Image (tube, rainbow, N blue to C red):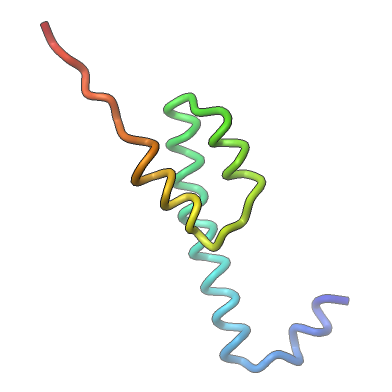
Length: 73
């Protein structure tokens, strides 16, 4: 099983994997929330499927989820 092999990893590697998983979760949650709020269904599905260590969610947040400024007349 996978859990049996995790105990064989050095403690530093295991800690790094846990930190990376938390990093990915936080960025993915923020990006998916913005995609849902902005009605970007395709981005939502892409972010849901692919795990990219936070890279894809960061790209979405900073380049594709810009808020539209409402113009007042």
